Image (cartoon, rainbow, N blue to C red; front, side, top):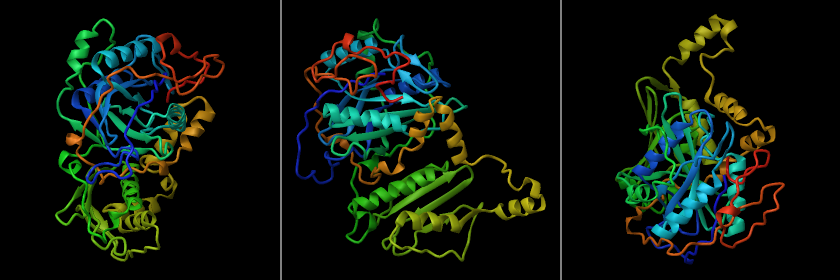
Length: 436
């Protein structure tokens, strides 16, 4: 699937305005209309066992936050496979030309699905392709979204923001969903009815998307001078703590209390926890409140030697256990033959199995598994309501270039405006230009 890259002019500033995201870094959130989130869900559910994808059109706020106003899915001639997807290049070029010239919408990103592979983040190939593309084209901001679905036909869409200043330091960020239809959806669907391809699935079905409520997104917290989240490094640590729970199948909802202290509400099935990071954290242990079906080990000590994430994960794992853990251990001791056979595989094992099946190409699978989690440095607390940000859609069609030339192709990449014929579909045996 070719990615259209173009130059996008942005003002540069020595200091971000107070209370707004810093334009010089990856955007800390992404904004999308409900109609577009629903549209992508329907596209994902059309292909529950193979990859699919499309493009995102909209604009960037003055502070670099992407706003998705219109999304498209695959064209009729798109190539869907288990481990990769190539967009119909002629379809993409024709739709881009129309939405940009007639409606002033910019090309701001891509989405594609990993269906039921269990990989809810960019693979190494995905990230590498986007990084090379934005470096080559000087595309200052880019939004890459990874979709998934489950056996209950529920879809999720995870947003990742990239910035030219640090392309490798891309961020997994929450969605701010505008709960209404995009003003462009019906207009473009009607005017381009003869050109557009739409999903067959009629109704969206959403799983647990990573979102942030409007009240939480509306302000950048003004922490006390001693609070641990006053540093950007520690905001990245908070993101890593949230990912620690998410990677183990928990849903996580961050909130602020009246003292501007962060609380994490963590749930997984019948288990629930409330984790409070007080004024003196990490010098003192976080306060953890638990549901009745969990128990705490009263002998657990908080040991902090400079690494907050390590101290937290070790403390949490030692402190909290399900109520029935001892009974399960007793049963395993009485039945040693079953001791090494858990009732269900652990989440990490599932992820490894899924990622192995994602690619028949061994080298690409290894690249996916080697993708570093530490590249994601989102700041879930430092996010702002962009209702007062000035949006400046492009008024002229920008130059369009490809991020890279497929192996074996004589096509030269340049920063001149592309025509549909220059955006040709790749041969199946050639590496794809776009993230898989």
